[in-house]
Length: 149
Image (tube, rainbow, N blue to C red; front, side, top):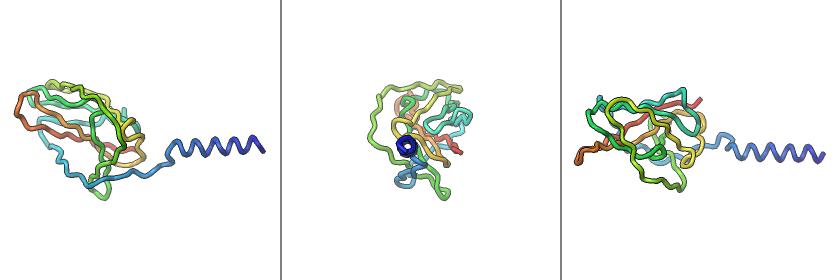
């Protein structure tokens, strides 16, 4: 009997710790316009996708270096009824180092484990801002869409 109670407690604890498919806390509908720039794109490499991160390929054909935040500097959005909504995150901190994306293709591993935790099944996109290193240029906001099954 005592062994059964311990097994039941362990199973309940495991269920609580895994989140049991907890619903996401969604914020306002997306107001951040992502760029459909023919000279820059960000693509999720789905073979690297996990509930806590993904490797993306940044295609920079702008002819100049682009700067962006580190692998944790990102925003996540969830799709519901054909519209994108920001996913709320708890308090988190991030260091401010920049990564430079030279013209061409660059792969970078992104992680949202510390800021958003593990995502349940659904349709998402990760958004990152990129700034041309040349002063006075307009930033680009690129999004890479993916589905967690």
